[in-house]
Amino acid sequence: MDNNTKKIMFSSKNDEWGTPQDFFNKLDVVYNFTLDPCATAENTKCKKFYTPEENGLEKDWEGETVFVNPPYSKIKDWAIKAYTEGQKLHTTVVMLIPSRTDTRWWHQYCMNADKIYFVKGRLKFEGGNHCAPFPSAVIVFKKVEVVPQINSMER
Image (cartoon, rainbow, N blue to C red; front, side):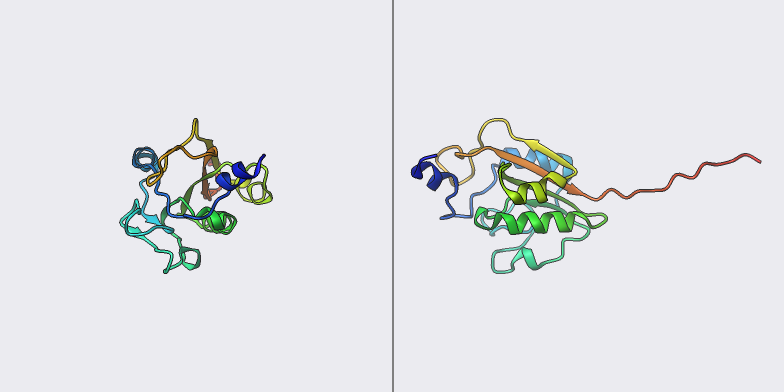
């Protein structure tokens, strides 16, 4: 990979690329999101959101259905947080992230997700003039409550 390609694919000059509204809407129909923990007032997709100043990494997401399009400059931190919060009962975390299957954090956290969806084609993020230069994935973390089965016995 040449240096120009690396600069484009791993650039963190702007972390505020908004999720395409139609893409979000399709996910929202399935998950009914309640929280966007890494947003601005201009690009949030949920009524409840945390700004960079409020730092969603430090907040508790328990009981929420969370949509995360994280700042890619801190993607590992957000993957760890999403995985951790997704281990709480009644909490679902859905992340839209670059498909970085060659990284350690991907294998430590994303590969332990409840679901992984690879996005066909390249997304065009709000605020961008071109499609992203990288593939994207949707990662779903959700702890499933295990209910013991009790076999009824006739007497």
